Length: 507
Image 1: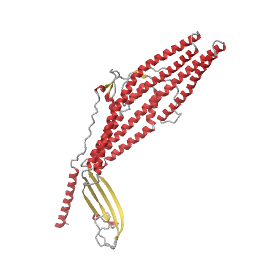
Image 2 (image 1 turned 45 degrees about the vertical axis):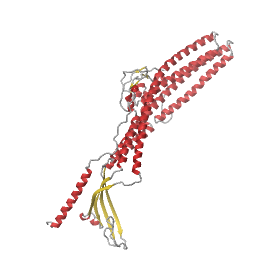
Image 3 (image 1 turned 180 degrees about the vertical axis):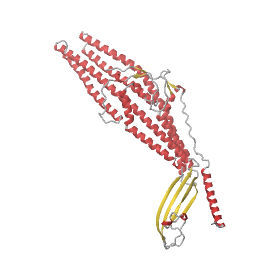
Image 4 (image 1 turned 30 degrees about the horizontal axis):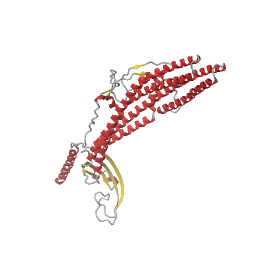
């Protein structure tokens, strides 16, 4: 059957109306959206010419260096200790602070992913059933949004509704994209925070391991000196029994033996505490790691430090990258705040089936549809938008100052540790000479005492000097290794290749 002219005209007009509306919506969606706010530019952080290459005593080095990123470079292997490698790998796997930081990264990435959801249409399906009874005392017709439709007063009826709802905000001013940009930068900053925690954890394990081995060697030195002092005490006691020396020399020897013997349990206590700390760093319970006693000199090598360190190495420090990413996020928040001053344009629509009879619910005649754009323009919101923008700008300036301060602090840390390494090497040479001289002095004092040329006080003083010098030498060696770890931490990682000297010595 051919529709009548009015019917055909109605259909054509309806199609034209829908097509016109659809065309408008497509045009609105395809408008070239802009991004309000400044685009991020790296702040000027030029390094002083004196820092173009960080050096010791103005020297340079031809040793190759790495400018890769992150603490994943296994720089701790330059110490050639399988036990240290195991402890660090165990810490990276089981340390709870590091694992929590990793979970924070996942959280930040999820937030960044969700921040971009507003760029896509929001589509939902709604279904509802309502039992309605209209008041008899209402004579006016219900509003268009009323569920009562055109029911007469006092009418009771059912309402079955199924609808597909659409809302799509057109990001014409870049508010959503700026927000996504900020969350993405914050997610990357969170990952840099995790890398910083990993780098600090590696450093703590390395320094703790060096301290443990220092205590082992100091314990060995104390026991060795105690053995020598007890031997001397036996000799003095025999000479006193023979009437060759006074009992005063015996008492003085006994005092020195007691002093040295008292150091042994204290060193054992310190070693146990240090092992407990290593176990905590590696995620283990106390007294569960089997770390046998070994002196520092037998388990580690002393790597050669590359003298020249390019200043660019500081750019891979996790804390510098983290604060710059937070600066990027603060910059994006300015654009997000500016977008709130402009109209919000959205496409909204709903369509489905609505009926008062269940068997007519999904009948084609029960269909309904509404679609169109909506515009919201802020007029006065109590200075909310102005305050939001001022806060965003202030936070950006705060992050900018923190960024500059972090860079300065990084250079300070590297300068401090380079100075420490240079002076520590010189200190080490002097202390080695001190140990050798004190040992020679002890032998001469014992010889001269047996010859009756000096009192036993000179022997006691020489023995105390030897013990103190040997303990101090071990402490300095450990301090140099600690400075080495601090340098690796200060530059954000290690080098691809580091020349090494020294060989492992047993015993």
